[in-house]
Length: 92
Image (cartoon, rainbow, N blue to C red; front, side, top):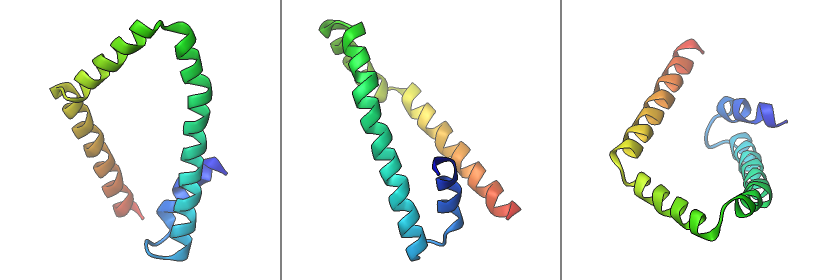
């Protein structure tokens, strides 16, 4: 089911009940995945890193989010998504 959700969302016309249902399922899968990550990966991180190390990781991440490198990464991802969408629109 998980492997088919994204193509099904793309295949549905926006504003239709099918699109609403498919996006709801997609959102539920994302929520489930995030919950699983919190239960497993965050638990592991608490075991592997000290409180000081975790605090430093938080600070480093916050600094990175406001950096030119982060802005460039986001621009690159948006560009890739736009190109992929354009190619898909042309080939369908």
